[in-house]
Image (cartoon, rainbow, N blue to C red; front, side, top):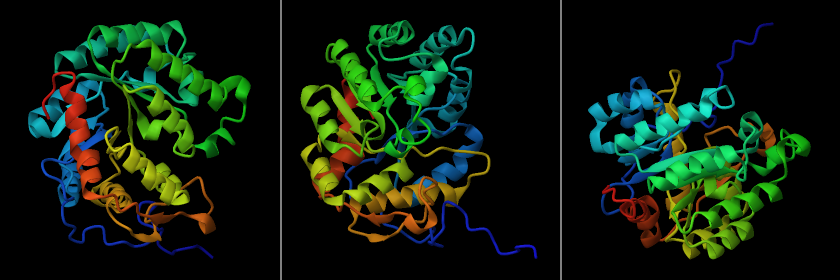
Length: 329
């Protein structure tokens, strides 16, 4: 017999009312999402409607250069850009030259931060590492322009145990982080942001060691499904980590737009982040974690960060970081 039961959306497995009123974060000034992917101007109306509902004002997006002017024309100072290559072309003939042209294009419209995607899968695809000529060629261009560096290094530990198990192809996490540290050391204090809590929220001692060693290193807390899983596994240690490093962590959602994604999808991500950082909420997440079986889906355990920490997380740290490269937000 055919199964005619309605499909539960992956972004709302619990039936949460994502349109219920929610007060703005208790932040003086605009709330800044420092890490997201608004990929097309066609997606922006639903995106900003959800953002307005959840009190998120300003975004640093990683999307195609071809969409930047269209987005800026309509959304003005609510949107800023992070210089990225054409993701689909990575590893193809001429992709590095094109990346450098795009870097110039982003810089010429005011962008002062550049992203390196150094996850294991991308490294294998691009035949690039932190110590390779490709990386250093682009890194020099970024440093010559005095831009902030952002990197995605690492990935969920569950992936290292599964999709990256072939270490001959993908390398090991320890090697990735050894080269990451050497790269940070090489930039002579240039600001560097480690995306997704430095790509290793499972290992807070590793992250603390990097922060202690490199005063120019910042972290963002983006990646909703990853953060909800790992925050919930180590709630008390994570809260202590955020408070200890309150001047070095930036809010980011890692929200990704799409033709098939509307208000409720975007709202689900903002809902989870606000529960994680602002509240002591304990309960099921509305967002399905595809890396875990149904019976092991994560229970959200909010950090209930103090108001002064939230002020820095949601706004002040991003303002201070961007001011270091002459950008007023």
